[in-house]
Picture: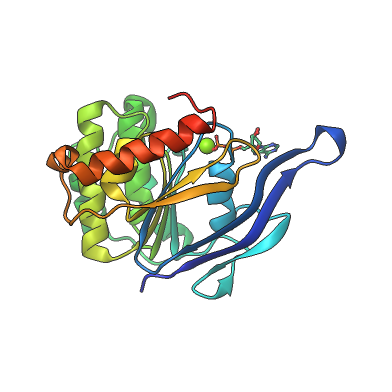
Length: 254
Ligand SMILES: Nc1ncnc2c1ncn2[C@@H]1O[C@H](COP(=O)(O)OP(=O)(O)O)[C@@H](O)[C@H]1O
Ligand SMILES: [Mg+2]
């Protein structure tokens, strides 16, 4: 069952005294159960910090975050996270890396599911490869499989496709949309790509530069499933233009 996310008046400051950094300032955001929300904003505006807070990997300085009405205090089994860098274990092969969350949760191996996920992201034949034998893009696809292997109801993704070439990235966008449409997960996606955000999200959250605040939330009113022919539609352009304008107004340079 998909879970809603509630973010209430959340601020996050790192360190104390004159060298402290306020990463987030008074964030309020509701993400509906099964909703797909993208977050865009300049580098350093607190996007990764926000994702880590929602994932229970770090605690807010003030405010609170709830998932399905429960206050988040630690990482839970219902949350899959894809980090900016793949962080695979070098001594485990591809299959063993994807299997890791199942081992940690003691939920038993599921070779068929692992194989299906690897097929999905085009990694068939690489089951026994070690991470160092793979390109950055392939490693990131392994990390995506690892995040999906427990079938989490909430998927948090931090610029997951940044290291992929353009074509693979478009394919992964379509796959992610398909997985989301089929499974109804709640998804929070951080991305640098305005096109990717508009292509995938129901709503796009535009953040201000540090300290990160929510500048505006753009609704993307395009039918599903979307494909890259949607790029030609007026509603697509309008959403992209609006987001670009907001980001430029914030001094962001793409
Ligand atoms: N663990 C940390 N300790 C100190 N400062 C941090 C830490 N994590 C992030 N920051 C600072 O918080 C700000 C926001 O970082 P981050 O959330 O990574 O931004 P983004 O993902 O939008 O690029 C940056 O100025 C960064 O240097
Ligand atoms: Mg980041």
